[in-house]
Image 1 (cartoon, helix red, strand yellow):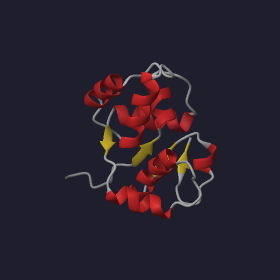
Image 2 (cartoon, one colour):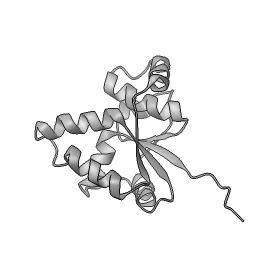
Image 3 (tube, helix red, strand yellow):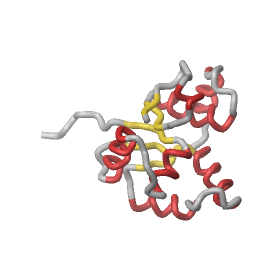
Length: 135
C-alpha cells in the first residue's frame, strides 16, 4: 500500500539558508524543518532570487557561503530543490503590495505561488498579509 500523505513543502529565504549552511543559530521551528528536509521528510524550495543574493553576497565577502557551496548542498540533499524565477512567481509578486524591496518580494512571491510557508526572520516579510511565514 502506498503512502498518500502529501509531503510538507516550504520555501526558504537567503538568511535562513545561509544560517543553516553556516551552521549558525536558527529558531527551533525553522531548524526542525531544515533537518527534516535533509532526510527528505519535507521539501524546501530555494528560490532563484536566493541563489542570486548568495552569489552577490559571497562575491562581496559578506557571507562565507558560496554559490558552489549551495550547489553542492542541493546536489547532496534532494529535499532542497531550486525553484525558478518564472511568470507564475511574477504574477504572485504583482499581488504583494506590502513588501517594498523587490528581491524580498520575489522570494515571498515564490512561497505565494507555491501556496506554502516561507522560512524567514525578515520582519517586513513576516508582517506581510500575503504570505505565511515560519521562523
